[in-house]
Length: 92
Image (tube, rainbow, N blue to C red; front, side, top):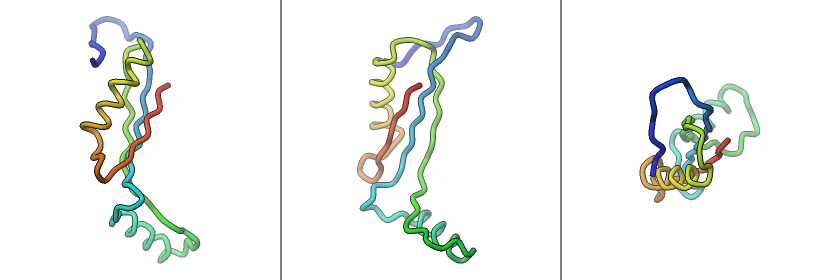
């Protein structure tokens, strides 16, 4: 269950970072466009480019394991498309 928000002075917080990228087997048109543009600009040697999403979520300080569990669920069910995307979750 997501943490509840409370009014009052700012509490210490945890920061979650979620990085979502296309799976390696999925065609990434944005990545290919960036790769091509880099080559045309003279940046040689770029093997592959993947364009994804980056999210930072600040949470009230609390149970890190519970936060990781519900963030993982949110990333899997809502923030990413598990059919075509992978995600990585970091919690500070």
